[in-house]
Length: 100
Image (cartoon, rainbow, N blue to C red; front, side, top):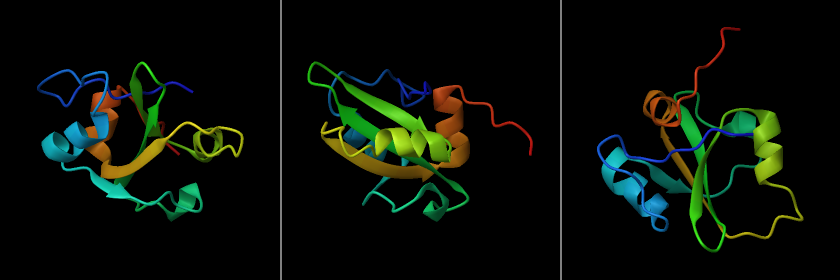
């Protein structure tokens, strides 16, 4: 695990309100949690914004294993699910997609 969005490209994300900032500044869209990772639109990236109490973390959910980690039934942290442009999300998270 480990790709997180810490800015909107033009400014750092605050400790709280990350989902709202990504919606406002990056065109992210709030969605219900998908049933599985393969249900995510091919041109979209899945973002999970978790409330850790002192801060929120905006994680790029980039594969099925990550999806399983963020949807574990024993993880009761409040979460907001977003989809956004894949290229933008990958750039903001520093994620380099490996070739198939």
